[in-house]
Length: 231
Image (cartoon, rainbow, N blue to C red; front, top):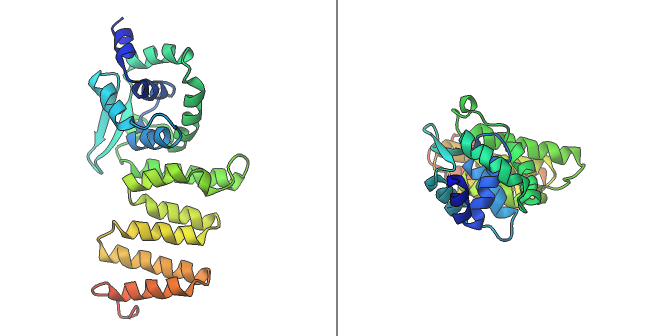
């Protein structure tokens, strides 16, 4: 009865997030829930507030990973079982089925395999997207995933390099270069900057984009303590 009363008090987005989590017995990255529901829905964008609402109602629990300050979500058994009953009669069910197809790309999360933080989950997500594109059955272009991928990248800037690699593998050098450039807006380590500018120069050469290649080479030279072979 307590769960029922609390559920009826929830905002529509909180109900949607809760039922999405209840549809899959897994520990899920918060960033994944946000990315998929916000980009695959026209009406439910206040996902961060909904997660806080559910947490305040003790319907979900958060796991903080100290290694990278990432966050994962899961349902205690009691709320999971309640959510399963609600899901069976919910008008959200077809929408949630679509969300789960994408959330599966993060892999099944358990308490014992999330200690490494968010990086392995995000890497797996990008690998699964690449695999789906290679199969070419349902998904044929990176653009079909772009909103989700770019949301993840804005929240986790290292993912811009994964997106760059994804674009290169699936035929868009321009977008691969663009993803590298977006990564460089966040990077402060000179050694890593050097590596990324070098990659941009190679991508540009491969595509015969001489202006971009020259620009990358100049930026490499401008990095303090550039190796002699760069100069």
